Image (cartoon, rainbow, N blue to C red; front, side, top):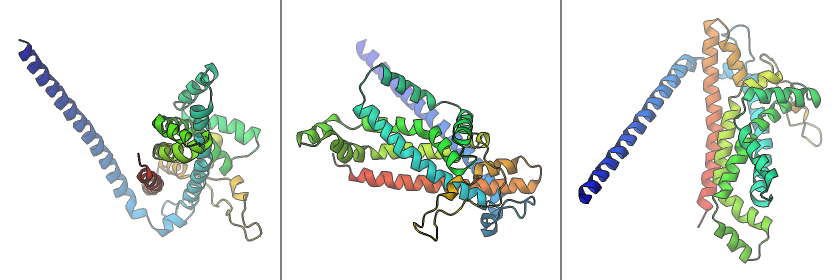
Length: 304
């Protein structure tokens, strides 16, 4: 009787395993089919509009003359600044919380709030950026105000992913470093951070992928939907050959430009929007590919 029971359990477990495998494959296949159909539809609509004229022209009231120069340049500006702000702040905060802070009620409150901030609607961050950066700090509707708003938006993601990456490092790595006479900071810098970097960069990929497609917070804080100029170049002809004027110029980004075109009734603007989506996807893929390359590079260096 016991043998039959064991056999029945094995057959039942095998049935459940195959059932879950089938459901998982089916759900993944359906999702990929819908995603592929959506991408093919966008590519079919917008691929003919892509070209140098589309990339080099400013927006226009005529769909056949409209371009995305100010939008894609603004997107690159904002993403570079967002990553430059969110990455060091997020990693530093995670190192402090995981390696230096004492475990008490205060750190528990901080950790709970960070986890909750990751789920706050993005439009709330837009209101925060409008009140804090645009009005209180008098940054106006500038590139740096938009970048700081998006940096706050993705900061919880960077902190949480960095903490999880640091937690995954075996304690024996730290103990071996301490045994060789290394200080706490030397252990973190030379052992913990390099080993955790693949996980940290995974979090950065997720954070930047969310930031590049955000529209609501930037519209809320007052980013423009139509501009026919670019932020000032960061390269100056005079010493010290670096200019920060562009940080305080007005801007727009690709998601806002796409949203503006989609809301227009003319068919030509829908085609422009499809072409803009293709460019936005390319920018996202390039950013992710660079981060994945760095992640793989650090992963190959890990020898445990």
